[in-house]
Amino acid sequence: MNHLLLADDDANIRALVRYVMTREGYRVHEARDGAEAAALMERTPVDLAIIDVMMPLMDGFELCAHIRQHYDIPVILLTARGELSDKEQGYLKGTDDYVTKPFEPEELLYRVKALFRRYKRAASDIIRMHRITIDRKNVEVSDGESVFLLPMKEFELLAQLAQYPGRLFTRDELIRLVWGHDYEGDDNTVNVHINRLRQRFADYADDFVIQTVRGFGYKIVVKEK
Image 1 (spheres, helix red, strand yellow):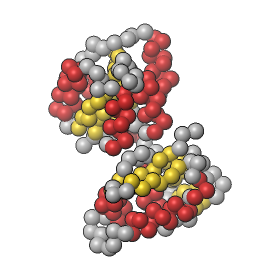
Image 2 (spheres, helix red, strand yellow):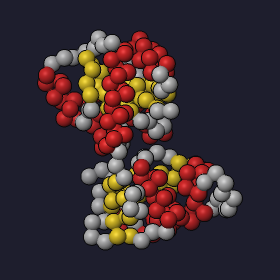
Image 3 (cartoon, rainbow, N blue to C red):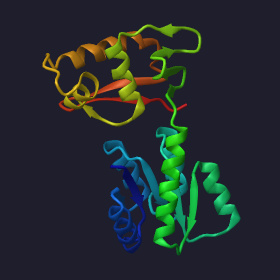
């Protein structure tokens, strides 16, 4: 199931979009303003964002730029504005599509499906965190000059965290995702592998860090530059 972020301060718009998207099997996570949407994304991974331009606290242009900086997901901007200059600003901020209000809900649905198809075709095996590049296809981590030779589980753990920067993973989630459902070993193995990764990439703390959230788990934070 694909998860959608829907950020709009108009409750009627949210209800309409929610109805159409849930009917098609999408899970919709709602926010009433840009700041609430940004906070939601830190704790809930989403696959596509539908965001209104005119929102309080953080407008759609700012939220779009924030998403582009921290996440690799498609973005659709909703707005009552139709001027070319507004569309230009939206695309410069990184939106993938632009829908002007009022709109037909079915058209929005078609655009969501089209973006998912486009992103699926363009999905890359490459994850970049400034100087560090993770190549999932060739199972390599490099800094542009040298390749780090990581044991497989360290590589898989790093790739899993880096694929969703800012998302908090519990130890149980990481064991299930990296070691598998049938793993019966000590759950302290996650801590051990995290510590090894920190040691290996200690010189790249300006690019990213693996943070511990006490009592919950771990997340990768990519530094802003």
